[in-house]
Amino acid sequence: MRKVSSFAVPHLQEYTKTSFSLISKDFISHFSSLPSTSTNPINGNQPISPQSSNTHLKSCSKTQSLHFSNVKTQQFQTFNTLVEQNPSQLSSRQRKIYERSQLEEAFESAKTIQEMIQVFQEMEVSFDERELGLPCLRIGLKLDQEGEDPEKALSFAKRALNILDRDDKLSLPLAMTLQLLGSTCYSLKRFNDSLGYLNRANRVLDKLVKDGSCSDEDVRPILHAVQLELCNTKTAMGRREEALANLRKSLELKEMTLERDSKELGKANRDVAEAYVAILHFKEALPFCLKALDIHKAQLGQNSVEVAHDRRLLGVIYTGLEEHEKALEQNQLSQKVLKNWGLDTDLLRAEIDAANMQIALGRYDEAINTLKVVVQQTGRESEDRAMVFISMAKALCNQEKFTDAEKCLEIASGILGKKEKTSPVEVAEAYMEISMLYETMDKFEAAISLLKRTLAMLEKLPQEQHSVGSVSARVGWLLLLTGGVQHAIPFLEDAAERLKESFGSKHYAVGYVYNNLGAAYLELDRPQSAAQVFAYAKDIMDVSLGPHHTDTIEACQNLSKAYAAIGR
Image (tube, rainbow, N blue to C red; front, top):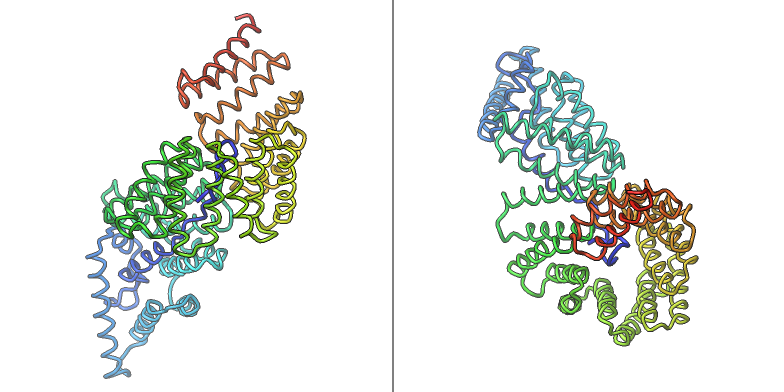
């Protein structure tokens, strides 16, 4: 699960990079029916022409591949029989072919990456470079699957690409190689490179299907891997709206291949719901989360861990939709299951979520009593303890007990300050919550200082650019509120660009930033600039909130003021 931007309910964990180990295994098993080299045993050691080899690879027919493999096996058996009966009768050419076939078989049967590389090093002596494309790809996939040496995986993937990407000949292995390059570049945080390789893989697969070179069935598993990697890469680059489109595409591909009530399909629906929550689209998240819950209940029963996780996410979605009673109901159902399974850490966080829901419902004393019980279950220096004190401060703020609330925030900040290097994302998100509580108490200097500290942490993390945009927007608004108009403008301008990149140009958060930026321009007697950004804000809010929403109406009023200032 993910944590939400500071613009709304921030109670979800960031989801991590999707595992491709199963997909990689599928790729590797698919290669078991493809020839490792281009040797032609019938005509001595003369290699098959590149055109002939590529024709086979482009066909993508599993039946043809298996037939080719069977023919090759029969030919190897013929050599084996000949060697056993009359080894002296083998010519040097035939002996060389036999040795090559033995290396191929050894490579096919290798179980570990060390065994594969050892055989590959022997193959380098006996085979031409152009014959080593598929073995390079297989080793790269295996290394990527194990995830321990992405640089080494990248070197094999690049070598495979140099061999397979010749003469503008498109093939399924070429698409696999490009997907592998995208995956390894992602692991090395080379996101622009990753995006380039994955986009090209997508184009190759599309072309193979359109040309009739490959069937949808053959392309689908590789296309699924490419879409998930595109989602991961774009998310890491802060382009969350685009990433969601790729995640939706991967779900569609799963729906074509899996049973309707498959557990894996349930998990995929929950992933999409989490992605929508991350960009604050709670209404769109709801049907995917409900579908995940239905699948997991049908397959695993009401008391499964997966159902508990679905219900906890559903609670967050209902909170975002301001349906707090429904949120609390789902949270309580989730807690029962987590308690039965003895999942203490998940249960603790669900109890903190429940307290926040009670606060949203105005049940402050009840929330404080819940938190007093929960805090006794936390370690003195744990992040969970800090979150308990933040929630406690939130309840106390609502009761206007500001002195007690400040004490709670000081305790939380003291714990979090020691975790900045080990858990920067979690700490940054907690700091954002603390800063909002300082705002509630009119402690604006403390709020701005903490947000600037948060920015310094997040700017070092390329995958958190959406959060940088949110924090910059908050700093700009607070500076505008406290009279620092000139200083507010660069924060607001930066926020607008980052949030457009992350959430799309029509997201309501971008509209709010433009509204504040217009106010700053107007304050500095720049009505032309103000009118331009107020017009942007109005257009965005018309789409995202509707023309009759109070914030849309406010944007219209601001635009009117700007037009009046320039005499229109």
